[in-house]
Length: 167
Image 1 (cartoon, rainbow, N blue to C red):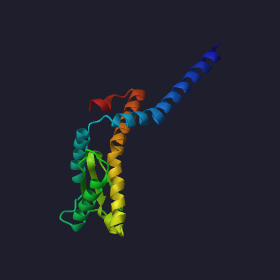
Image 2 (cartoon, rainbow, N blue to C red):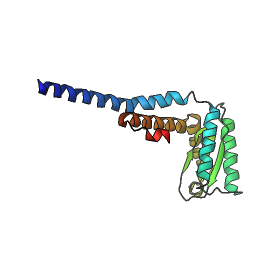
Image 3 (cartoon, rainbow, N blue to C red):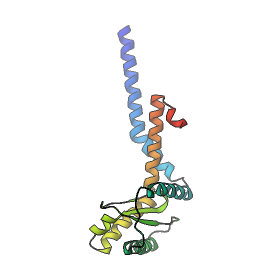
Image 4 (cartoon, helix red, strand yellow):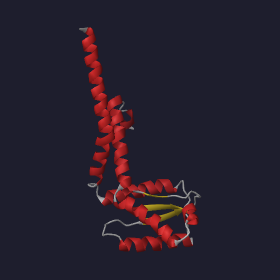
């Protein structure tokens, strides 16, 4: 009889672990995708602004460069031809040799100067800008933040460690 209860307990633990894995793999991403749609754009803008303020202390933004003017002109042209939306895009060119760009919630697009140097034509650069605009319009960064928070909450629930919440 003791062996049966051990098997039942092990089975229940396996079921619980499976449910947690399903929640992690499907529930959290689904929750984040649905929830991101309901977050007001004004909140996203404030979040993006605060992230940019914190990051701009670590990154040196290029000032007065023709690359910035070109990036702003391309962004304005792309924005004018984009489907109607309520975002106010802001482009930042930072002095970094990496060939990369990324978008923050609310409309900030960060371009590394290495990307500008690596592109051969304005159209190639515009393709990257359009790609980053889509990240904003589809709320990918916001969804990622919600997913990360949800994962953190799941870990806290499982571990019982609420110390990180109070800080």
